[in-house]
Length: 228
Image (cartoon, rainbow, N blue to C red; front, top):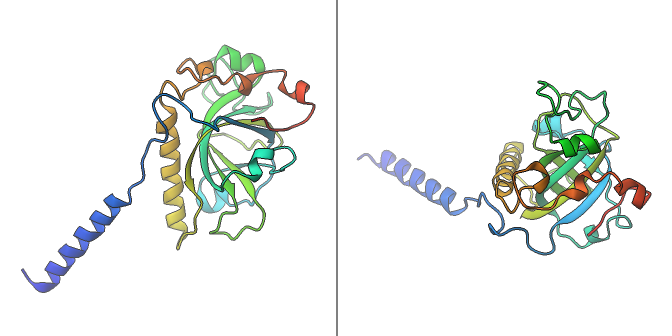
């Protein structure tokens, strides 16, 4: 075999071996369910973010305000990527407003969700500074794993954070960041697609997600806040 072909073969072999050795696990957490300190609860009105999610990454995000006084646990939690469940109280004018019918644009949901006005979705989120963009302010950016027909700024969002995927890191190129986020999404979907991690309210699991669709939460708290 010519030397250049031998070198190319060896290079491909080591690259493949390194890729296998650094492959990320696609399921987080035991099959028996969440472990302490999870689940964590967070809620607030969706605010404008940096405007990069859809434009640069092709991965739209919904931002929630990070306030240590409202979310005391967030000051001590490590920066990185988390996953869990999100609920949104979309207005009737929104094309994804929850309905129990088979409408093609609305979000088909359970009777409990439709009654409360909330709809439930799996989500993956970043809490931190995003070193790739050198952010100076800590942010909470949520990517809801669902395709929406329109934005939902100002909408009430609740999060049930189920676990931690990875620490945040810098990337040499934007493509590497996008690829890692796509893996994060796969990890979230696969991890939540288990009975002990899926919500009881969806009829597919045993995890208590009643807080996500509870009608009285806003009245009881009197403001947007966080529980743990």
